Length: 347
Image (tube, rainbow, N blue to C red):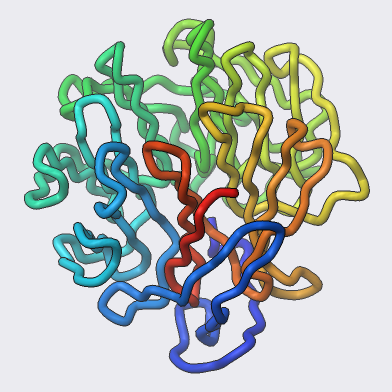
């Protein structure tokens, strides 16, 4: 996702990450009740854009970026580097305690908290999104297609990556081709699935990227883009079926009608559009990350009213590319591309 977003600026230049971005160092700070500590760089790598934290062990983190996956079991003091290559997706499954990583076209799987990783499937295109449905023993995988010839869609498998099955969004139709599936989310009550995608070359014009819904566990899909203005890069669904869709640079849109219509963001909100995390215990509380580059100045924002308004809570000057919470929801973690990892207690 960052490849289409970043054109950055920096507070303090050191190393340079891909996309020619100088490293940014954000000093420890206290903003809006959040207390952000010093930056943590896995093996001195600032070019990280994914983070997952084990729900049962807040000292265990999985972090990744252009150089692969890093694992720490001591709160970022020491690291191991088990996987090399450009990371496209990273997932911690909290019930069975499984970890997943998409490195290029290969899906890796760990049963032992990141000590050992097994390649379970090689796709024809890079892996860019993952979602686990633990109770149903289901894993959903989204890829980054780069042509208007092959059908795009979602792959389903069991949690171990077996029985991998492809389900096209719209077989043999132009709207179902050339899609980068940035996000997959699931309604925990109805089981509806949602998938947000970017058309890789933004063609044809006018640009109308789809937003997909499936009511039968991903077997068939319906385009519920409707009045969405752009492509979604992240999404989440509340237990009452309310859908959040984060547009790249166009903020958080909401739907109480399963995507049949969408509520636009408050125009007073900042131009959010990199990462989104819904608090699983307080689902009207959202965290969103912002790009640092061009006219945007980065940072992490919080909403306590279902996205109607957002408040800056720290890290201005950094691109907040991924956000995680610990299992007790008392600490928040940020992967900031061209900077590193930042953490704070949740006030």
